[in-house]
Length: 416
Image (cartoon, rainbow, N blue to C red; front, side):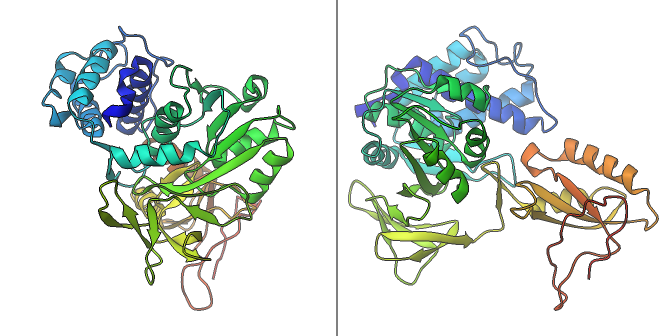
């Protein structure tokens, strides 16, 4: 990866490290953390200015060392000895100068148990180079995604170099409203987002300048959102299918299209949940997907459902079983079920609660459960609707079933 040393750009390293540090602090403090607005200055002290204690510093430094494989160059201990942004940027740069062949990302994640996914840098570079052909004549990149996740890394760190934009700062949209995006857009912009970002943006973007392109990933983009963006004047919304485990797998430009495999992926007949990845040296590796794939031909496919039990909330993998376990720890909960809301109900989790005491004050219990979720669950994991009943919903076969949200939140539902 030395032929495109992305780490030579100090501002790129600053963005990567800042995003990773902020995400790690959020993981360590699920009740929320108040951090200075980014970008952080060189003299920002990780302990003093971010309020990090010694144990948190160790965890954050370890996460950065793991992501950039600083242990390969033997300088990871300098992160603990010199906890300022300037020093961490210098340590990361020195480490990557010595070893840059692999990078490790975690599954999107503050939910479940984050999984470490290591990728050869050459594969990520190959993907960025191929994707660059989809975005001709771009002048700027605007991003609503963090750069330390694999999607953000490829599209906001590697892709700009492939497009000849390495000297053009990536404009961070995460601290702005969609209304600000409407004022900011120009011809030649490429906007990197995710489905929830685009869902919010399309409501405030009745029209946009000609020549604006967009990208969406991390979860399926609803057809009505992608169609509305095109009707508003977006030149193209490219949808990327992939994951932290696989990196990018395929792409499409219309909601009705099949996804097309990137050139280094191959279908495996008889294995709808696996693909074969071709490395630069000709070696082939079988990789498990997070979804089953239905194939139109050898290169065109559609995902048909997750293999694991994760669901997507705001572009984040959330595990309902983990949320249920957290709710079951509350002393007033006898049983619980957690599901993703139906499309007509919203896009967050909902919970069905069987109170331990059938005559419980439901309004008070709801308040206590919301407070419990606030301290025990990350933001995407917190149910936005609680339904109470004497028993969990079941279908005619006695299996757990979905339930409808009722405008009457005072009584106990009797779901059979």
